Length: 165
Image (cartoon, rainbow, N blue to C red; front, side):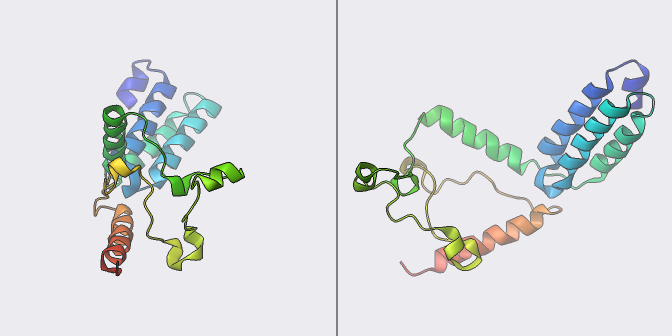
């Protein structure tokens, strides 16, 4: 970072790279990383150089020492690939809004289950188009804060798999 700044690189370019790094490489292993990177960008924009190097250094050291996960990035790529491969697929009927009697009569919103009416705000309900049923995009790692997300998802999936049909 200092080599770039001393060579005359725009500090906002450095901050931009940190924001991307925070989201792509640190991800949900430390969700605060994105906030730190954006705050550094705002700070360097606000104070300029030479003092802007200080928040950039703080962000760089924070990001470098965070646990890393690109699981959210991989999920985005997988979902994007499915969109390109399958095109526009219809939203499941139970997720469609039914503002008119005709739409309600066509089944829009039928059998929708409001998650907050269920324990832990978790309900067995499909949200993907039928053609993509069962597809998983986000597979969290066991690194950093993402470990908590992975445990929560395992618990939800276990509840779903043991639920009587």
